[in-house]
Length: 406
Image 1 (cartoon, rainbow, N blue to C red):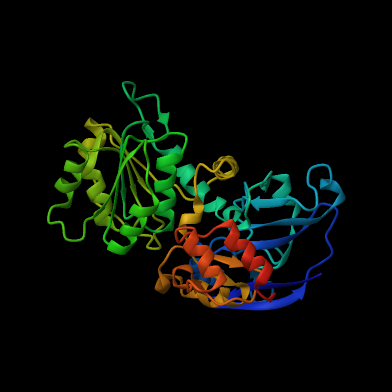
Image 2: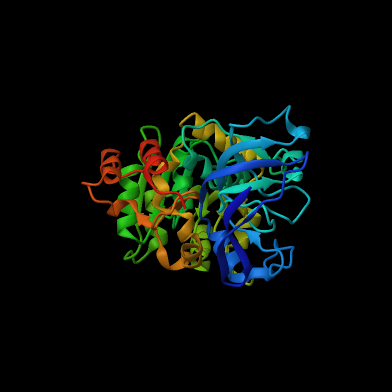
């Protein structure tokens, strides 16, 4: 079977190509990718090429298919997996395979999210990393992986209470939470999880310096159970005291920093309550990035610092459940759509484009489009307008039924 895919050949060298997939082996699966979500990690891969830690092949001879936030449909199952997987079923994938550096979306010639058809290798199924997904849409499936990263982060925070030797894992239920620089797509997923997840704070303060992003977030993220407030700290002279007052004069039990800015880590350090936990969630590219924190309070006030990168299969299962049960609405972070024809250029320009999540319909030839700029008189624009400016199943169905194939 022929596939079309975007492959990486080296630094800043992404190419959309058509090529033949090999016949699947008895322990492999042939699948159709319907949607992939573009991740900033793929931009980092494009910039580093063969220097990326997960690239294990000679890219000039064996280019890898990019994209790892994928959702699709199983087409054909090798006989070794027929008892477990069936054609026609939707799937998502945990690409961080245990005990190996090779990762779909970084290291494999025949599997990645930015493709029409792929061959899923045995190690994905053998490690229980090909997961069933029964949600209503494909685009929500493609956002399970990023949501699972937040699920992992929330689980990784910890508190000790009266016994410093026993770590109580997870955010503090009914505590005070601060999310710094959190109006990007990952930050807003964190906001949604804080408002609707299994364990929630009683107060949530979300900061940024972009008024438009804050206004949009304020409109979309509301709660009757959590006291949530979105604040702009751009022109605040004393941000630390301002945020302390918003907490009720104390501080915060859980703080998440969503921007790789040392001053924000220092700010978070100053605002931690006794037994508070700061999670540096942002993924920096500077290997020497450092920040000043209060180590006196680590010793005497039980301050905790953690950081997470990605999630595991358990986290993905939790994310699948949150989406299937409609507790978390990942639709709100979708701001742009595109076809496979635009993936290489948009991936390379991620840092210049801004916006939220960019959803790729891999079988479509479609221009990169900001969904807020769709005219009200167009069919798709009307669908978006009628849904409060948010992407939806109806919008996806329109794309799948009406846009030309690539």
